[in-house]
Image (cartoon, rainbow, N blue to C red):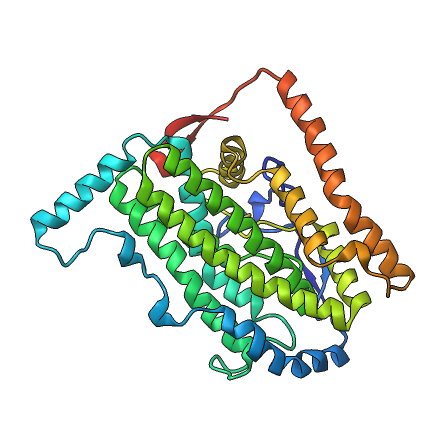
Amino acid sequence: MQVQAVSYCHAFPNFKRCHRNAEINAVAYVSPMRPNLQTVKQHSMPPEKRELFKHLEGWASNTILPILKPVEKCWQPQDFLPLSSLPVDQFTDEVRSLRERVADLSDDLFVVLVGDMITEEALPTYQTMINTLDGVKDETGASDSPWAMWTRMWTAEENRHGDLLSKYLYLSGRVDMKMVDRTVQYLIGSGMDPGTENNPYLGFVYTSFQERATFISHGNTARLAKTCGDSTLAQICGTIAADEKRHELAYGSIVSKLLELDPNGAILAIEDMMRKKITMPGHLMHDGRDSHIFDHFSTVAQRLGVYTAKDYAGIVEFLVEKWGLEKMEELDGDGRKAQDYICRLGQRIRKLQERAEDKAAKCTDTRKVKLSWIFDRELEL
Ligand SMILES: [Fe+2]
Ligand SMILES: [Fe+2]
């Protein structure tokens, strides 16, 4: 087993970043949001367990692949955007009406949309991450293993999310696309390390959590957009949320299967990821200027109720229920300890958050920050 130098950053919105290592920013094209040096395991799944994933290929073909939608039945970004092949006047009218719809949307909402879009646009990182997982990675780039096919077609479905949000934001005229795209480039260059140790047990726990998190945040953004009068944007975010829900179903079903076939191994993997805390995929976000930009985005998302620490606790509780973790009986001593930890975790996070909120309520200081994404306009945090 090898070790590698990385660290984790906490997933809770509002939490301060756990690492700042500006010294590593020695090269101008590398984001300063690089992890600290800390040891972490690699290839932590025992080699004999690879067989389990081989054994599950038939099940994955019959159960997981059908969760994807045939391309011909999938929506495409053009379905929600002004048709660029229209004569110039008509195209311009459509852009004008888009701009009228977004006129009443707040800068706060745009910051959340930009943060969500940048997170979606770092998709190459997520496909890379899944292809680090032993036993399920795409060995050739076009492998016909159902695990590899899932990953490629999941990526292809996801690819539409960032594309659509990016085009909508571009046409809105409300954000500085050069700074937004620069942030995307930095983020892809930085990558991510969610602590999944090349281990598909850990990897699929991570993706189960993250798909639910994105389902919740896009769904909440849809509701806000509707309240603010942009029904097309609401439809866009709602449609993306529906994709995330399907993806959550797939990844959650894989973990359910692992719990059925290897209850101790699977519950220890869930405990491991929960103890590490689920790192947000965009946690290394940087625009080249503001080393706290991810915190600022997270704070705004928390303030608008788009994604909060309560949502994090809610996801933990949802997964405990979905996977029937409280009722599992076939566990050994370590498995029972893991069960106890996971089943109490949601409540513990809620209590911590309530204490943090009480503290925040007593603090009357407000901070103003300038955000490059919105042309350096100030936001109150
Ligand atoms: Fe997505
Ligand atoms: Fe997703």
